Length: 467
Image (cartoon, rainbow, N blue to C red; front, side, top):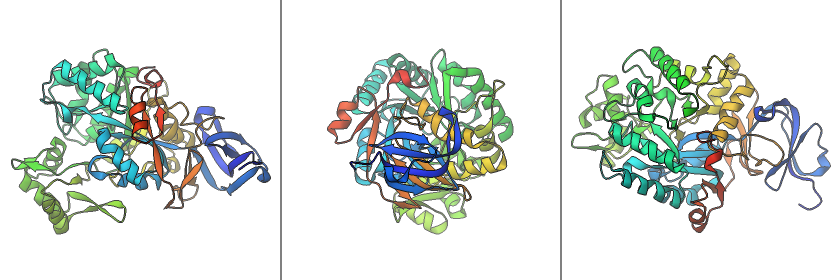
């Protein structure tokens, strides 16, 4: 590489970088994993490699602020996300023991962090503060970026939920919440409960659109109320929403009924009994979709074959239902407050191993429709989520930033190149990357490195929650 000013130059694409107020046809030069220059007409002889991107759109690498690539999925989601332009992502609900093996076996070069599912590890739905503190400390020491309360699926009491939020804030730990407690649920009542649980604390509200499926009021009424509540909370919350129509949940049953309260909700929404028999009927009818891996990606299977897979796994299979309202997803992605700021900070997927990694594709559809500008889409896919998690070298293309880039076909609106750390990891749908870097805190860096991974440090004070 000696003698070249740049390892790679992306030439002639429309560069959209809202963090630096850039929207113009420019060249992007990369060197040693960082952005080295953005300017017109970088001479080809200065680059070891040059790629012509005329007609394409160049975004800072997409940061998916809510995915699932750990646990039973064991890394299948890495290829699925790289294929759609994701360079950085946060797994919402894996311990490091669940998360790291998949990254080691199937990572494709992305930068990935994980939030610890704290309520799965508690001894009881009403746990003492001392136990919560111990789990938060353990999660951070093992390399987790923070913790997540999985309230919608496995609800805790309101007191315990509020205690976890308070401990995380007191500890300066990133805290995300899939809304719902034993007194409410994963719907609009869970949103209405936020202020009393939060007090003066701060937290990340996961997938804001998913509580607005029409279980209490109409989806339109629910999403408008959700936007009002989030806007009123201001800097106390950050939030993301997704554009997929299917959800993600679990099919595992015990004592004749699904363990996940979200699965029970999905069954009740279409008139099925919230029982194991009702779930079997929903799968057979084509409403419930069992997720299974085939050919290196997750597929949705329903009908008799879906029932067979579910029963062969003793019901312990990931599932999806087509329950998300297009009204809710549209408004959550586009709604602004009176100051002209987006109420929901970022567009995520809640995908990864769940085949709904459509943020770029459907985001570009919103641009074509006129609901978002290209710069606004880049903000919601890259700049805002990087800022949420304190990833100061990501989400923009300023000189010295990480050379993470998502290249989008300007006509089709699909990702055609994913570059992570200056290295292409996806070219026209073909995955060519390997390995990965783990986002962690200063407390977890030693554990991450001892496990054999590079560590990308996120300082708590740099996150939007605590800044």
